[in-house]
Image (tube, rainbow, N blue to C red):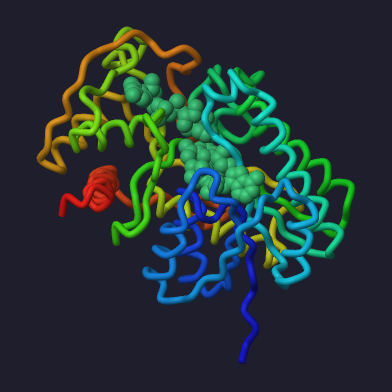
Length: 342
Ligand code: NAD
Ligand code: WQD
């Protein structure tokens, strides 16, 4: 039997990792999910297994625990790793920066070290559009300057990109890709996996779905006086399954040896969408109403950011396909599944 290429998915029980695990299995990869479940639930792994019909392996491990992480490398013969394991709450990173530096840098440095020590090759890192800050020209390309981070969380993304770039440069055995995600939203069409925020959602779409479900009283729209067509902020909302597929494309590129040894790609749709447009589209496609009010601007928000995706389109042969309507339908289907509303 042909040997499948095995991929470590660290943080694979989380929102983006679980969707990526599904796409990897469906593309013919063997997947090992490693996660300490600090911001996720084992039900996500069960969802991955149900969707794929494959008993995907799961290891409960903290990537910051170097000895335990090392044992995982002894136990599994993956040659590639996709590293999702990180904390991601921007506000919390401001109030507790060491929690973020310790976890996000510590887990990634362990990964890079262990990949090298065990002679494993390909590292795919979850970066973020947050590295562009308030860009001078839009849309942003991969050559747009990174702006000084406005939060410790954002700083960890820049620092991990640099750790990967420098490591690949210094250690011939490694190659790396950093994917800069724009705003991932939506859920798998099966509604068996999706985003599971703990506590009050910080991100727009989970707040919308929870408000529509009656769990939150009212969505606050943070600012209607920005210099944009309708006064609300503009973002590039990327469907979660499309985003997951970008990982498969990037992995194939590394395995196939194409491109440079370290590369960066924007992963978005290339289309700016305002907060008002997003809420109105959600209501229209789902036939539900979302109680909302205009509230003051949120500290730290950029006015607008969206991606020039031509590099990923050309080099990865990837592009965003799912419509915003379908993505927002999937977000609502997932919320209803979680709440037992079906
Ligand atoms: P998530 O919190 O749902 O997933 C992260 C997973 O990593 C969780 O399952 C968590 O339990 C796990 N984890 C955290 N620290 C760990 C550790 N030390 N050891 C083992 N597991 C650990 O978040 P997500 O939205 O799926 O994000 C995944 C990655 O993508 C993160 O690196 C995040 O910073 C990045 N990213 C997310 C977004 C977004 O908007 N969701 C945007 C850009 C980049
Ligand atoms: C989107 C828009 C808000 C909530 C964050 C991180 C970023 C990246 C993705 C990881 C903004 C508005 C939101 C609400 C609102 N994560 N909004 N009411 O801020 O673009 O990016 O997630 O890397 O680093 O900063 O996403 O979903 O929080 O906000 O009006 O209750 O929705 O002001 O314009 P953001 P978001």
